[in-house]
Structures are given as structure tokens and as C-alpha cells.
Length: 244
Ligand SMILES: Nc1ccn([C@@H]2O[C@H](COP(=O)(O)OP(=O)(O)OP(=O)(O)O)[C@@H](O)[C@H]2O)c(=O)n1
Ligand SMILES: C[C@](O)(CO)[C@H](O)COP(=O)(O)O
Image (cartoon, rainbow, N blue to C red; front, side, top):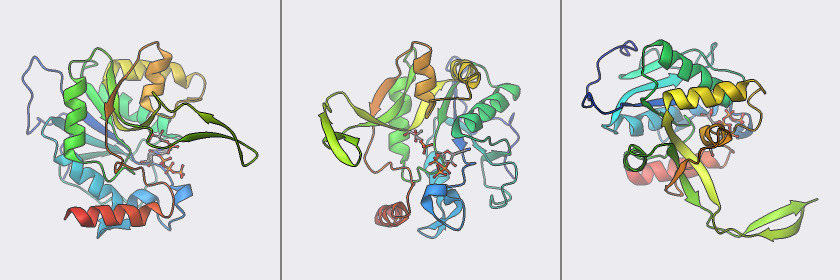
């Protein structure tokens, strides 16, 4: 049985250090993936995709708790997963799901100064080392930040299926997750964005950017893909099997 929200951590941080909590939006339908189940529950390398994501996060000693936010009518979540708390508070969009999860953390008494690492349930290839690198890079940062990848390819702007121009790729990064911000600052930023239906808020950093702050970019790995399209399952499967 998952511990209650107030349960003591098996890895308590020194009292002077803000703690780190993982929050996983897991309430999507996976419409682009074309799978019979929501993609986070589709079997990959022998178990539901989200179980790989959770296994990676459980390997991060600095994480105080792991919370998943499910759709209210989710019928696929296993009854209990050791050390994981499940909330049935998913929203209509990813941003709304994250907002609801953050509110639940605050209601459970998590201090606004604690760090929250928001991670897509669908990014099942993240590793404990990548998450730890993000925590180490951001724990002393005034804003927080995100894993991201410097753009490796030439970037084209398209009009009507043809190249309109080539875009300068220097200083362009692909945003990944986890994205790590203080609970209070992220909740405030998303509360503001909520007034306009979370328009344009495709990740946590975009909400923080709207408040005038500049999240730190922490270089991740190309393997930390978000399973999105049908062919991504085979890629995820091959990478996961290559690791065991
Ligand atoms: N209302 C939503 C939408 C998405 N997500 C979660 O956000 C992550 C990234 O979103 P995305 O890849 O877009 O997932 P889906 O919305 O499920 O996919 P699609 O857009 O293809 O339907 C996933 O872990 C997904 O479960 C969520 O918790 N709540
Ligand atoms: C948060 C994210 O994974 C960063 O790349 C991405 O923005 C999610 O996008 P989606 O359209 O909700 O899949």
C-alpha cells in the first residue's frame, strides 16, 4: 500500500535543505500513440510503460516522495505500487493535471519552498543519473530548471509542406522532463496561466518564463524520449532491453 501523503521519507533530507518531490502527470489518453490502452499502460519490455518510469524515479535517493496524477476514471492503474502515491485528479490538459497535483501537495502540507520535479509518465527512458544531475544542477539555483537537449539537427521552417527557411539552431534546445521548480513558485505561475485556460503552457518552464524568470537548462540525453507516436514503443522497448 502506498504511504499516506504525510508519511515520513525513507530518505529524510537534513532539516535545513528543501526536499524534492516527483510529480508525474499520468492522465493523458495517448491519442497520437494509436495504442489500445492509454500509452502509459501499454506493455513495453514486459511491463506497463509507466512502471519503467517509476522504477527510474525510485532509483533517485534525493526524491522524498513520488506522486502520480491519474484521470478520475482511470481503470488501469494497479491497486498499489510500493512507495508511490496515486491521486485521481487529472485534468483536461497536461498543465491542468500538473496544477491539480501541485495543489494536492500543498494541501498535504508540503512547504512552498520544497522542490517539485514534474516528469511525464510517458518518458519511460529517463535514468536515475539524469534525474540526479538535474537535482544537483538546480538545488542551489534561484529559479530551478529542466533537462533539455541542444538541437542536434538542422532546423527548417515549413510553409505548405516546403522549406520556407533554415533557422539558426545555435542556442536552441529541446525541452525534456523532469522540470524542477519550487512548489510555491510553480503553483503561482500556473495559477496565473489558468486564468487564460493554460494557453501556450506546454511545460512547467513556460509557466515560469511568463513570470519573467529564466529556468536553467541542464543537458540531458537523446534517449529520454517522450513516447508519443506508434513507432516510439519499439524504440523504447529496444533501449530498455539493451539496459538489462
Ligand atoms: N490531460 C492530460 C494530458 C497529458 N497528461 C500526461 O502528460 C504527459 C505528456 O503528455 P502527452 O505525451 O501529450 O500525452 P497524451 O496527452 O496522453 O498524448 P496525446 O497528446 O497524444 O493524446 C503524459 O505522461 C500524459 O499522461 C496528463 O497527465 N493529463
Ligand atoms: C513537457 C514536454 O514533455 C516537454 O517537451 C512536452 O512539452 C509535452 O508536450 P505534449 O504535447 O503534452 O506531449
